[in-house]
Length: 445
Image (spheres, rainbow, N blue to C red):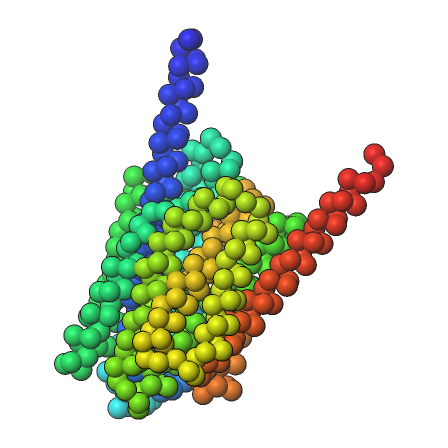
């Protein structure tokens, strides 16, 4: 073998090693970040919905403010991340999220002073609404660009969002158990809201992780002229893959809105005056379902499915069980015993969160195939905007018409409606694309 060929082999081996290094770092960054989100979600919704130290509409107002701000700023901040560096933008986004959680803590501390409490509620929504769009596409685009530079197989890169789910499958389970044990302990001394500060400090782990990778391998800037907003929009809406990604983004964020944003609060309010053990164990059952088997199954099954089946089969495999389980729970909810309720919420949590993780990973994989690495941050941000918008619309509807949280049974009804609508829309989309392909290949020449 010549020296040139030996050098090429060594370079390819090094590239493979670095690709899998960044794939692993990407997977662990995402799973730790998602776990910390769940920790803070549990604390916030128990404090707001169960203990009742915030106004009834606070959860819906904060959620709506966060998602509408995110919609407005996702794409501009995607351009900003390309200019100042994607790792640096990620660090700024994490810091703002930490400030938001601290503001929520202050809103609770000052709850006897409505003006200041409401002010900090707004600051909370603003900080997280600013932080999320800065972080949203930046961290993912940072690691995707690094993987792109060292990838030797397109399939590995285009399925990286799904493949990375195999890392840290058990971390969310541990963090969720920690959240419930911590809340239970701190509630005994009426200090549960102090966990919001602890939850904010957890994000320093993500900040340190991406800072170390930036320091070692350099940041990711876009030095060439970027695609304009209109060019990005045209590419997304003008290609089948782009439209498919937007459909999945809308479905994912609409589907997750009733359960992950409001179910815990709804359970807390519905069972608060009946049996304090009921709402406590019900919330634990649901969250353990999402963060134990929901995460573990997605880590095992989705990387295999993405390689072995077509996109329509892949999506139907997760939407149909979600539709089926939510329909059964909806129909039998009023006849469930206490033990039956716990089991139903656990199973629903498993299937529900498994579905959400599948849709988000599939959407991200699909969008990346439409763009070069220079436009990853902006493209992922723009795809998320559509989903965030619908999530925000749902939060406004809940705040205005459902007194800040829907009844528990209504949560399941909404999941049924969104799942069924998603199946119909996606199947029709795939049929339409198949029809266009047949027309194209049947034309002469």
